[in-house]
Amino acid sequence: MTAAAKRARAAPRPLTWACLALAGLCAAGMPAPAEAAGRSTEQFARTLAPVDRKLFEEYLSAKATHEFKSDAYWREVADKKALRRGKRSRGQTVTAGDYVTSFPPKYTGRELPAALARRWAAYQAEGAGKKPAEPPKPLPGLAEFLAAAEAEYGFRPERIPEREFKVRYAREAVSLGLTADQVVRVYALETSGLGTADMVSGIHPIKKTGKPISSAIGYAQLLTANTTDELAKHGQKFLARLKAMSADRSLPPARRRALADKHDKLAVMIKAARAIPQEWSRHVAFARTERGMGIHAINLDGDIGPWLQVVKLQGLKQMADKAGMGKLTGAEIELMNLAGPGTALEMMRPAARKAATANFFARDAYFRNTIVRDKSSAELLVALDKRMDDNIVNPGAIEFAEAFREVSAEIASGR
Image (cartoon, rainbow, N blue to C red; front, top):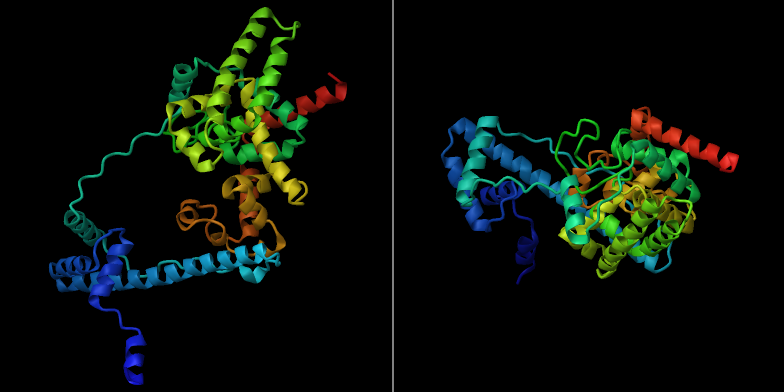
Protein backbone atom coordinates (compact mmCIF):
# COMPACT_ATOMS: atom_id res chain seq x y z
CA MET A 1 0.00 0.00 0.00
CA THR A 2 1.39 3.41 -0.96
CA ALA A 3 1.87 6.21 1.54
CA ALA A 4 -0.91 8.19 -0.15
CA ALA A 5 -3.27 5.23 0.14
CA LYS A 6 -2.44 4.85 3.87
CA ARG A 7 -3.16 8.52 4.42
CA ALA A 8 -6.46 8.21 2.61
CA ARG A 9 -7.50 5.22 4.74
CA ALA A 10 -6.54 6.99 7.98
CA ALA A 11 -8.27 10.27 7.10
CA PRO A 12 -11.61 10.80 8.88
CA ARG A 13 -14.60 10.61 6.59
CA PRO A 14 -17.21 13.37 6.58
CA LEU A 15 -20.51 12.64 8.28
CA THR A 16 -22.85 11.16 5.68
CA TRP A 17 -26.64 11.21 5.78
CA ALA A 18 -26.58 7.59 7.04
CA CYS A 19 -24.14 8.52 9.83
CA LEU A 20 -26.31 11.42 10.89
CA ALA A 21 -29.41 9.29 10.75
CA LEU A 22 -27.84 6.60 12.89
CA ALA A 23 -26.69 9.20 15.40
CA GLY A 24 -30.21 10.56 15.58
CA LEU A 25 -31.61 7.12 16.29
CA CYS A 26 -28.97 6.40 18.92
CA ALA A 27 -29.72 9.71 20.61
CA ALA A 28 -33.37 8.71 20.68
CA GLY A 29 -32.44 5.44 22.39
CA MET A 30 -33.36 3.05 19.56
CA PRO A 31 -31.05 0.02 19.32
CA ALA A 32 -31.13 -0.86 15.62
CA PRO A 33 -28.63 -2.12 13.01
CA ALA A 34 -26.74 0.68 11.31
CA GLU A 35 -27.97 0.13 7.75
CA ALA A 36 -31.57 -0.39 8.80
CA ALA A 37 -31.40 2.68 11.02
CA GLY A 38 -30.07 4.81 8.18
CA ARG A 39 -32.71 3.66 5.68
CA SER A 40 -35.49 4.16 8.21
CA THR A 41 -34.42 7.71 8.94
CA GLU A 42 -34.00 8.60 5.30
CA GLN A 43 -37.36 7.09 4.45
CA PHE A 44 -38.99 9.19 7.15
CA ALA A 45 -37.29 12.30 5.82
CA ARG A 46 -38.78 11.64 2.35
CA THR A 47 -42.26 11.85 3.85
CA LEU A 48 -41.65 15.42 5.01
CA ALA A 49 -42.35 18.70 3.29
CA PRO A 50 -39.13 20.53 2.30
CA VAL A 51 -39.28 22.92 5.25
CA ASP A 52 -39.77 20.09 7.79
CA ARG A 53 -37.13 17.96 6.11
CA LYS A 54 -34.59 20.75 6.49
CA LEU A 55 -35.46 21.10 10.19
CA PHE A 56 -35.20 17.34 10.67
CA GLU A 57 -31.79 17.14 8.99
CA GLU A 58 -30.48 20.03 11.09
CA TYR A 59 -31.82 18.34 14.22
CA LEU A 60 -30.10 15.02 13.43
CA SER A 61 -26.86 16.78 12.65
CA ALA A 62 -26.95 18.75 15.91
CA LYS A 63 -27.76 15.62 17.91
CA ALA A 64 -24.93 13.70 16.29
CA THR A 65 -22.46 16.47 17.10
CA HIS A 66 -23.69 16.70 20.69
CA GLU A 67 -23.47 12.93 21.24
CA PHE A 68 -19.94 12.91 19.81
CA LYS A 69 -18.87 15.64 22.24
CA SER A 70 -20.66 14.00 25.17
CA ASP A 71 -19.09 10.62 24.51
CA ALA A 72 -15.66 12.25 24.31
CA TYR A 73 -16.27 14.02 27.63
CA TRP A 74 -17.33 10.87 29.47
CA ARG A 75 -14.41 8.95 27.97
CA GLU A 76 -12.09 11.56 29.47
CA VAL A 77 -13.84 11.12 32.84
CA ALA A 78 -13.32 7.35 32.63
CA ASP A 79 -9.68 7.77 31.57
CA LYS A 80 -8.98 10.11 34.49
CA LYS A 81 -10.64 7.68 36.89
CA ALA A 82 -8.44 4.85 35.62
CA LEU A 83 -5.39 7.12 35.97
CA ARG A 84 -6.26 7.89 39.61
CA ARG A 85 -6.81 4.21 40.35
CA GLY A 86 -3.39 3.40 38.93
CA LYS A 87 -1.67 6.15 40.92
CA ARG A 88 -3.24 4.95 44.16
CA SER A 89 -2.20 1.36 43.51
CA ARG A 90 1.37 2.59 43.04
CA GLY A 91 1.23 4.71 46.18
CA GLN A 92 1.44 7.96 44.21
CA THR A 93 -0.32 11.20 45.17
CA VAL A 94 -3.50 12.13 43.31
CA THR A 95 -3.48 15.80 42.33
CA ALA A 96 -6.09 18.28 41.10
CA GLY A 97 -4.84 17.70 37.56
CA ASP A 98 -6.04 14.09 37.75
CA TYR A 99 -9.68 15.23 37.64
CA VAL A 100 -11.87 16.69 34.92
CA THR A 101 -12.78 20.24 35.94
CA SER A 102 -15.21 21.11 33.13
CA PHE A 103 -18.87 20.06 33.05
CA PRO A 104 -20.59 17.80 30.50
CA PRO A 105 -21.50 19.61 27.28
CA LYS A 106 -25.05 20.87 27.04
CA TYR A 107 -27.18 20.36 23.97
CA THR A 108 -27.70 23.72 22.33
CA GLY A 109 -28.79 22.59 18.88
CA ARG A 110 -32.11 22.66 17.13
CA GLU A 111 -35.13 21.00 18.67
CA LEU A 112 -37.92 19.60 16.56
CA PRO A 113 -41.24 21.46 16.60
CA ALA A 114 -43.76 19.59 18.76
CA ALA A 115 -45.84 18.23 15.88
CA LEU A 116 -42.78 17.00 13.98
CA ALA A 117 -41.32 15.47 17.14
CA ARG A 118 -44.53 13.50 17.67
CA ARG A 119 -44.47 12.25 14.07
CA TRP A 120 -40.82 11.17 14.41
CA ALA A 121 -41.47 9.38 17.70
CA ALA A 122 -44.48 7.56 16.25
CA TYR A 123 -42.49 6.56 13.16
CA GLN A 124 -39.67 5.14 15.26
CA ALA A 125 -42.05 3.21 17.49
CA GLU A 126 -43.84 1.76 14.47
CA GLY A 127 -40.59 0.79 12.80
CA ALA A 128 -39.35 -0.94 15.93
CA GLY A 129 -42.59 -2.82 16.33
CA LYS A 130 -43.07 -1.34 19.76
CA LYS A 131 -46.23 -2.00 21.67
CA PRO A 132 -47.80 0.72 23.81
CA ALA A 133 -45.79 1.00 26.99
CA GLU A 134 -47.33 -0.74 29.97
CA PRO A 135 -47.63 1.36 33.11
CA PRO A 136 -44.73 0.67 35.47
CA LYS A 137 -45.40 -1.67 38.36
CA PRO A 138 -45.86 0.34 41.56
CA LEU A 139 -42.98 0.16 44.03
CA PRO A 140 -43.72 -1.37 47.43
CA GLY A 141 -44.61 1.00 50.22
CA LEU A 142 -45.50 0.97 53.89
CA ALA A 143 -48.41 -1.46 53.55
CA GLU A 144 -46.27 -3.96 51.65
CA PHE A 145 -43.41 -3.78 54.18
CA LEU A 146 -45.79 -4.36 57.10
CA ALA A 147 -47.63 -7.18 55.34
CA ALA A 148 -44.35 -8.92 54.45
CA ALA A 149 -43.07 -8.60 58.02
CA GLU A 150 -46.14 -10.31 59.41
CA ALA A 151 -46.34 -12.96 56.70
CA GLU A 152 -42.65 -13.90 56.73
CA TYR A 153 -41.70 -13.37 60.38
CA GLY A 154 -44.93 -12.92 62.34
CA PHE A 155 -43.56 -9.48 63.25
CA ARG A 156 -45.52 -6.31 63.90
CA PRO A 157 -43.35 -3.28 64.69
CA GLU A 158 -44.17 -1.49 67.91
CA ARG A 159 -45.32 1.96 66.84
CA ILE A 160 -44.71 4.82 69.26
CA PRO A 161 -45.60 8.55 69.14
CA GLU A 162 -43.47 10.62 66.78
CA ARG A 163 -42.08 12.81 69.54
CA GLU A 164 -40.96 9.75 71.54
CA PHE A 165 -39.33 8.22 68.45
CA LYS A 166 -37.28 11.40 68.02
CA VAL A 167 -36.20 11.38 71.68
CA ARG A 168 -35.08 7.74 71.46
CA TYR A 169 -33.27 8.52 68.22
CA ALA A 170 -31.51 11.47 69.87
CA ARG A 171 -30.45 9.30 72.83
CA GLU A 172 -28.91 6.74 70.50
CA ALA A 173 -27.16 9.40 68.44
CA VAL A 174 -25.62 11.13 71.45
CA SER A 175 -24.50 7.80 72.93
CA LEU A 176 -22.63 7.01 69.71
CA GLY A 177 -20.91 10.39 69.45
CA LEU A 178 -23.17 12.06 66.88
CA THR A 179 -24.24 15.65 67.41
CA ALA A 180 -27.65 17.29 67.12
CA ASP A 181 -26.33 19.47 64.30
CA GLN A 182 -25.20 16.46 62.27
CA VAL A 183 -28.33 14.38 62.75
CA VAL A 184 -30.94 17.11 62.45
CA ARG A 185 -29.35 18.56 59.31
CA VAL A 186 -29.30 15.14 57.62
CA TYR A 187 -32.95 14.70 58.65
CA ALA A 188 -33.76 18.17 57.26
CA LEU A 189 -32.35 17.29 53.85
CA GLU A 190 -33.57 13.70 53.62
CA THR A 191 -37.14 14.48 54.71
CA SER A 192 -37.49 18.23 54.01
CA GLY A 193 -37.62 18.75 57.76
CA LEU A 194 -41.08 17.16 57.90
CA GLY A 195 -40.37 13.44 57.96
CA THR A 196 -42.08 10.92 60.18
CA ALA A 197 -40.70 7.60 61.40
CA ASP A 198 -42.78 5.81 58.77
CA MET A 199 -42.02 8.19 55.90
CA VAL A 200 -41.43 6.39 52.60
CA SER A 201 -39.60 8.27 49.84
CA GLY A 202 -42.11 9.83 47.47
CA ILE A 203 -44.94 9.93 50.03
CA HIS A 204 -45.62 13.29 51.66
CA PRO A 205 -45.16 12.63 55.39
CA ILE A 206 -48.02 14.93 56.43
CA LYS A 207 -50.51 14.78 53.56
CA LYS A 208 -49.75 11.09 52.82
CA THR A 209 -50.08 11.83 49.10
CA GLY A 210 -47.85 10.57 46.30
CA LYS A 211 -46.37 7.20 45.36
CA PRO A 212 -43.17 5.48 46.52
CA ILE A 213 -40.17 6.39 44.36
CA SER A 214 -37.77 4.12 46.25
CA SER A 215 -37.77 1.89 49.34
CA ALA A 216 -36.13 4.62 51.47
CA ILE A 217 -37.83 4.90 54.86
CA GLY A 218 -37.54 6.83 58.10
CA TYR A 219 -35.51 9.80 59.29
CA ALA A 220 -32.29 8.62 57.64
CA GLN A 221 -34.13 7.24 54.57
CA LEU A 222 -32.59 3.77 54.65
CA LEU A 223 -33.16 1.58 51.61
CA THR A 224 -34.31 -2.01 52.07
CA ALA A 225 -30.79 -3.22 51.20
CA ASN A 226 -29.33 -0.83 53.81
CA THR A 227 -31.57 -2.37 56.45
CA THR A 228 -30.48 -5.92 55.60
CA ASP A 229 -26.82 -4.90 55.49
CA GLU A 230 -26.90 -3.08 58.84
CA LEU A 231 -28.85 -5.88 60.52
CA ALA A 232 -26.32 -8.45 59.33
CA LYS A 233 -23.51 -6.31 60.81
CA HIS A 234 -25.07 -5.19 64.09
CA GLY A 235 -27.99 -7.52 64.73
CA GLN A 236 -26.31 -9.42 67.55
CA LYS A 237 -25.91 -6.17 69.51
CA PHE A 238 -29.62 -5.48 69.03
CA LEU A 239 -30.46 -8.97 70.31
CA ALA A 240 -28.30 -8.46 73.39
CA ARG A 241 -30.06 -5.20 74.18
CA LEU A 242 -33.51 -6.68 73.72
CA LYS A 243 -32.59 -9.61 75.96
CA ALA A 244 -31.31 -7.29 78.68
CA MET A 245 -34.42 -5.15 78.46
CA SER A 246 -36.73 -8.17 78.67
CA ALA A 247 -34.93 -9.21 81.87
CA ASP A 248 -35.42 -5.80 83.50
CA ARG A 249 -37.85 -6.43 86.38
CA SER A 250 -38.62 -2.73 86.70
CA LEU A 251 -40.63 -3.01 83.47
CA PRO A 252 -44.25 -4.22 83.45
CA PRO A 253 -44.59 -7.95 82.71
CA ALA A 254 -46.46 -7.31 79.45
CA ARG A 255 -43.65 -5.08 78.21
CA ARG A 256 -41.04 -7.68 79.15
CA ARG A 257 -42.93 -10.42 77.32
CA ALA A 258 -43.26 -8.18 74.24
CA LEU A 259 -39.51 -7.51 74.26
CA ALA A 260 -38.73 -11.23 74.55
CA ASP A 261 -41.03 -11.95 71.61
CA LYS A 262 -39.42 -9.15 69.62
CA HIS A 263 -36.01 -10.64 70.41
CA ASP A 264 -37.02 -14.04 69.04
CA LYS A 265 -38.48 -12.66 65.82
CA LEU A 266 -35.53 -10.39 65.21
CA ALA A 267 -33.23 -13.41 65.64
CA VAL A 268 -35.00 -15.09 62.72
CA MET A 269 -34.55 -11.95 60.61
CA ILE A 270 -30.86 -11.79 61.45
CA LYS A 271 -30.44 -15.38 60.36
CA ALA A 272 -32.10 -14.55 57.03
CA ALA A 273 -29.94 -11.43 56.58
CA ARG A 274 -26.73 -13.29 57.34
CA ALA A 275 -27.61 -16.07 54.93
CA ILE A 276 -27.09 -13.56 52.12
CA PRO A 277 -23.48 -13.11 50.91
CA GLN A 278 -22.13 -9.81 52.23
CA GLU A 279 -22.14 -8.12 48.84
CA TRP A 280 -24.20 -5.04 48.10
CA SER A 281 -25.65 -6.47 44.87
CA ARG A 282 -26.88 -9.55 46.77
CA HIS A 283 -28.52 -7.38 49.42
CA VAL A 284 -30.22 -5.37 46.66
CA ALA A 285 -31.57 -8.57 45.11
CA PHE A 286 -32.75 -9.85 48.52
CA ALA A 287 -34.47 -6.51 49.12
CA ARG A 288 -36.86 -7.25 46.26
CA THR A 289 -38.12 -10.43 47.94
CA GLU A 290 -40.89 -10.73 50.53
CA ARG A 291 -38.33 -11.72 53.17
CA GLY A 292 -36.22 -8.67 52.42
CA MET A 293 -39.21 -6.32 52.49
CA GLY A 294 -40.34 -7.86 55.78
CA ILE A 295 -37.02 -7.08 57.44
CA HIS A 296 -37.32 -3.44 56.31
CA ALA A 297 -40.31 -2.99 58.65
CA ILE A 298 -37.99 -3.00 61.70
CA ASN A 299 -37.24 0.66 60.91
CA LEU A 300 -40.74 1.45 62.21
CA ASP A 301 -40.25 -0.27 65.56
CA GLY A 302 -39.87 2.08 68.52
CA ASP A 303 -36.99 0.07 69.96
CA ILE A 304 -35.13 -1.16 66.90
CA GLY A 305 -35.73 1.67 64.42
CA PRO A 306 -33.70 4.36 66.20
CA TRP A 307 -30.85 1.93 66.90
CA LEU A 308 -30.69 0.79 63.30
CA GLN A 309 -30.77 4.21 61.66
CA VAL A 310 -28.32 5.83 64.06
CA VAL A 311 -25.82 2.98 63.73
CA LYS A 312 -25.90 3.55 59.96
CA LEU A 313 -24.91 7.20 60.50
CA GLN A 314 -22.26 6.16 63.02
CA GLY A 315 -20.74 3.87 60.39
CA LEU A 316 -20.21 6.86 58.12
CA LYS A 317 -18.63 8.81 60.98
CA GLN A 318 -16.27 5.92 61.74
CA MET A 319 -15.17 5.68 58.11
CA ALA A 320 -14.38 9.39 58.09
CA ASP A 321 -12.45 9.08 61.35
CA LYS A 322 -10.31 6.26 59.92
CA ALA A 323 -9.65 8.38 56.82
CA GLY A 324 -8.43 11.23 59.03
CA MET A 325 -11.26 13.55 58.01
CA GLY A 326 -12.09 14.71 61.54
CA LYS A 327 -15.55 15.85 62.58
CA LEU A 328 -18.03 15.74 59.71
CA THR A 329 -20.65 18.39 59.05
CA GLY A 330 -24.21 17.39 58.29
CA ALA A 331 -23.60 18.15 54.60
CA GLU A 332 -20.52 15.92 54.54
CA ILE A 333 -22.46 13.04 56.09
CA GLU A 334 -25.18 13.57 53.51
CA LEU A 335 -22.59 13.55 50.73
CA MET A 336 -21.49 10.11 51.96
CA ASN A 337 -25.12 8.98 51.65
CA LEU A 338 -25.47 10.48 48.19
CA ALA A 339 -22.20 9.49 46.53
CA GLY A 340 -21.24 6.48 48.64
CA PRO A 341 -18.85 6.71 51.61
CA GLY A 342 -15.55 6.06 49.80
CA THR A 343 -16.35 8.36 46.88
CA ALA A 344 -17.54 11.15 49.18
CA LEU A 345 -14.35 10.99 51.25
CA GLU A 346 -12.38 11.37 48.02
CA MET A 347 -14.54 14.36 47.01
CA MET A 348 -13.77 16.07 50.33
CA ARG A 349 -10.01 15.91 49.87
CA PRO A 350 -8.25 19.14 48.77
CA ALA A 351 -7.23 17.77 45.35
CA ALA A 352 -10.86 17.01 44.45
CA ARG A 353 -12.58 20.08 45.83
CA LYS A 354 -12.63 21.90 42.47
CA ALA A 355 -13.25 18.77 40.42
CA ALA A 356 -16.54 18.44 38.54
CA THR A 357 -19.01 16.09 40.21
CA ALA A 358 -19.10 14.11 36.94
CA ASN A 359 -15.82 12.57 38.10
CA PHE A 360 -17.66 10.77 40.88
CA PHE A 361 -21.04 9.68 39.48
CA ALA A 362 -22.01 7.29 36.72
CA ARG A 363 -23.28 9.06 33.62
CA ASP A 364 -26.96 8.19 34.15
CA ALA A 365 -26.82 8.90 37.89
CA TYR A 366 -25.24 12.30 37.23
CA PHE A 367 -28.20 13.38 35.11
CA ARG A 368 -30.79 11.86 37.48
CA ASN A 369 -29.58 13.88 40.48
CA THR A 370 -30.45 17.50 39.83
CA ILE A 371 -28.52 18.75 42.87
CA VAL A 372 -25.34 17.14 41.50
CA ARG A 373 -25.26 18.64 38.00
CA ASP A 374 -22.90 21.42 36.94
CA LYS A 375 -21.13 21.69 40.27
CA SER A 376 -17.70 21.05 41.70
CA SER A 377 -17.34 18.92 44.82
CA ALA A 378 -17.11 22.04 46.96
CA GLU A 379 -20.16 23.57 45.27
CA LEU A 380 -22.18 20.42 45.88
CA LEU A 381 -21.43 20.62 49.60
CA VAL A 382 -22.57 24.26 49.58
CA ALA A 383 -25.78 23.25 47.80
CA LEU A 384 -26.46 20.50 50.34
CA ASP A 385 -25.88 22.95 53.19
CA LYS A 386 -28.23 25.45 51.55
CA ARG A 387 -31.02 22.89 51.26
CA MET A 388 -30.49 21.93 54.90
CA ASP A 389 -30.68 25.60 55.93
CA ASP A 390 -33.96 25.94 54.05
CA ASN A 391 -35.53 22.85 55.63
CA ILE A 392 -34.25 23.05 59.20
CA VAL A 393 -36.92 25.65 60.04
CA ASN A 394 -39.74 23.18 59.26
CA PRO A 395 -41.79 21.67 62.13
CA GLY A 396 -40.27 18.20 62.14
CA ALA A 397 -36.72 19.54 62.28
CA ILE A 398 -37.65 21.95 65.07
CA GLU A 399 -39.19 19.09 67.06
CA PHE A 400 -36.09 16.96 66.46
CA ALA A 401 -33.79 19.71 67.73
CA GLU A 402 -35.99 20.00 70.84
CA ALA A 403 -35.62 16.24 71.37
CA PHE A 404 -31.83 16.62 71.39
CA ARG A 405 -32.11 19.46 73.91
CA GLU A 406 -34.27 17.22 76.12
CA VAL A 407 -31.66 14.47 75.94
CA SER A 408 -28.89 16.93 76.77
CA ALA A 409 -30.87 18.03 79.83
CA GLU A 410 -31.29 14.37 80.86
CA ILE A 411 -27.54 13.81 80.64
CA ALA A 412 -26.75 17.02 82.51
CA SER A 413 -29.11 16.09 85.36
CA GLY A 414 -27.77 12.52 85.52
CA ARG A 415 -31.15 10.94 84.79
